[in-house]
Image (cartoon, rainbow, N blue to C red; front, top):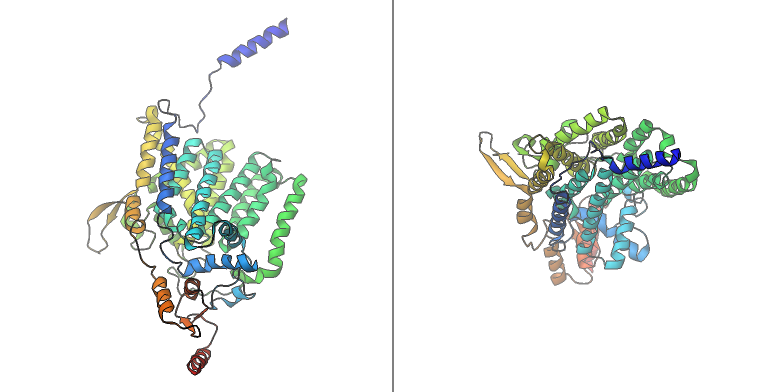
Length: 499
């Protein structure tokens, strides 16, 4: 009887226990479901805007480099070089394009094998991977912090003009972003739940990042330092050795043949780099500003001439994450991971392969969105907003999506300050207008070839031979950065005249 009574007492205690609110909970009791609904609607608006007029323009040169090798995979199972140029001969040693990092092109080839290959479908793939990046960020942010932070981080990612700019190109940006977020999420999950499935999968995720694009190697210092922090025993389990061996063999099989095509082992010309071969940390500060103050990413103005609400909110979020890691032992692993994630671009700045802020987008932008979302959570907890924190957070995230910016004039003596809504302005000025051709005038050149060039004529392009060749269905010689000498072109000209 005593045992029965004790059991009844414990059951009664459990039934009447009031759940404690966790320190990370946003907690709007009035409208608990408002914030997720607002974030989903904003994310859908961002995806729709990003998808508008995707197929209007021909590939430009960098898209050709990234996407056209996938077309040859359909017929030859190999990412053949689409160019006649010989800009980096060591990269084309095997007549393949970036054979040491083939995952993006094979994934694009698989996608376009189902839907068909075109400019539209290749860019669709980038948008799709951007949506999956937001989903992966939502899951990781939920594990690091709370649902409110997670929903807002995903919404901010998908609605930023910075995201729209890069996701609308048929390139590796969003694919590598997605792979890196998934790999970091698996690593963090493994550290928090040892011997889980994530323990078996995270090394495969890291290998996928390395095989996607050269900039994926920036994940190595993040992973290495984080494993040193938590200890290898928390993230590795010998029971999963077959998974580790499989991931290692996949990487070794590619590197054993193509390791010497990686740019780390060669001198890379940086004459066309706006920041030189090795930019300083100030370049990184400017790049972060460009991500948090959209429409400044083109380098059209000095970074101190514009201000966006996302900047102080991201700083507030970073301070909150750091303080939480100092105060709560259970939060330190997440704090270390976020800080390493944020500092990875600084490591990139010490390599010769950094060119323009858009390469830092892959690593810095997701964590910028995470910190801005965290800043909204902290601000909504202010004494005057606590009782309606869900409404306050919803209003703040809408304001950040619209992205109002204060901008000074460009002139040295121009002290005027204007207000601009970055997201609506970008959609209105860059997405909605119908354009007949890209800046290389590829469509105009293709029409000229179709009208005037005979079957036995030779076509020589001054710049983008791959896009023109794709549009015309003919081989196009390249004059710029070609391995051929001037004499070879004169001989080619003489042969065509004789014919």
